[in-house]
Structure formats: structure tokens, C-alpha cells
Image 1 (cartoon, rainbow, N blue to C red):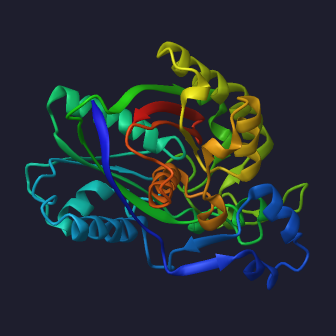
Image 2 (cartoon, rainbow, N blue to C red; image 1 turned 60 degrees about the horizontal axis):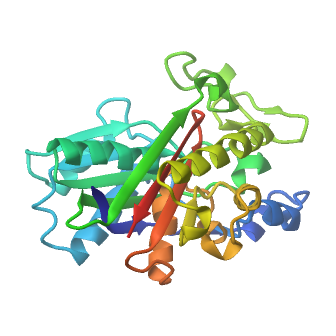
Length: 335
């Protein structure tokens, strides 16, 4: 059974507050935006700083705390939508700059908000098969580089971050009890960056900015998100999955000690809490401090919860990630 032995993270140095947006956007109702999103601050990478750069720093933070761990690692998995290059993968470049052993299983996978939970499922399979015994799972993105400065629907929401989780086999009955992963590819265009890939390469025409009916400005090279469509979809699908995984394991929602949802926005987290009739005190959130950090949001929230002593040995924790794909995934972990 897989356990999350350690989590470390790195946040870029550029701390951006909501007030910082007012300099260029005097017409934005920051108070209303903050009330809906729940985001007060977020962190942005420098123009030449990448997801690979901040992931390296997160790994160094981990190795500085556990110097003997580096020699044990036999798998490195990197989840990102913010690759340094089309070729090679971030996992192999990170493997190189960390100077890990050649006997390491390394690969990338391309997921966003459900990426951490999916990664736990992948890692659990590697551990059970014996392919790996000591895994580094990296979750990192720099969505600040994808959003248009004049698109308040996304600009105020996303932050950059990197997390590294050390995963290994459990030595007792603690660990990941169960996991469910789901997909709905027919809704894939609800969150999309239309230009920049093989289907629609970047060009002069893809840089042209247009204003939508809500006054948000973006080009085909920027992140496009159907916020209401995603919100409605998540509200219909995620509670069903959470109820199912609990039912499959004969666990009542009341028995769960802590819920850590993807930090999409305050409105979404509050909505799930209400639909599932969960005690709000059992729902952990740090979105106000870091924003929506995509696949890093759940491990980052978990680390904050650990630091704040919100999780103790033996606690039953439910993780649920949802978003781009559209994809959603939930798991039960006994800490």
C-alpha cells in the first residue's frame, strides 16, 4: 500500500496581491473577485523561470531535510502542463540536474488539477508491481505564463508552484486505501489553450486579442476557461465519485477526518462542501494564500495542513482533484 512519506514545495519569490492588479485594471471589482475566488495572494515565476526550475528547488528542499533519500530514489514522475521543451521531458532533465542514479524509472504525464491523485494511482501500481520502491512525484505548473493580463476570469485565480512528494510502500495498515479516476474527454474544450501545439501552431493571427461578452481579453495563445460550465460539471460528477468511494469502502462521510479538495476557487470548494453536507471545519483550504496552483494544489494544501497540525497519525483523509480534461479523481488515505 502506498504512503505519502514526505512533501516539500517551492513558491516563486514574486508575491502578487489583489491590490497589485488595480494599477493596470482600475475597473476591476477586486473585492467581489476576492469574495468569489477566495484568492488574496499568489506567486508568479520570473519570465525566464520555469516549472523545471522551481521543481528542482522543491527537490533540494526535500533532500536538505532528508540527505539519505537521494540515493534511494528509483522512480521520478513529473506531472505538468508547463514543459521546458517539446522534447525532452521535464522528468529526464530534472533527473539530470539532480544527478540521480541511472537506475531510475523517469517519465512525464500531462494532467492538471486531477494530476496529483492520478499520480498516486500510477505510483501505487509501480510500487505493487515492484518496478519502483522509492518514488518522487513532481507536480508543477506556471499558469501565470498562459493567462492574459487583461483576463480577470483567470488572471486573479492562478498561481505558480512546485511540489515534490516522496512515496513508498507502507509498513503497516496506513496508506492509500482506494482510488477512483474518471474522464470526460467530450468536455475537453471547456479548459483549453487553443494555439501552440501541432493542431494550431503559434502565428501572427493567434496572437490577436479579442474581448468576450464579459469584457475579458485574451488571444488563442492564452488560457480559455468556461468557468460556469466546469463549475456545473464538477458539482454533478465529483460528489457522486466521493460518495461511491466511501460506499465501496463502507465508510461514512462523517468518519473522514479531513477533506482536501483541489483548490479551484472558494466558490467551488464551498459548493462541494454544501452538496456533500460536510462539516466545513473538516475541509482544508489554503487558496487564499497561494491561489489555484493546478496539479500542485492538493499536495501543497496537504503540506500546509500538516504544518498546521490538521492531520495526525491514524487520520482518514479524502483527496479529490478535478478540472482540465475534463478529469476527476478521488482517493482515501489513512495517515
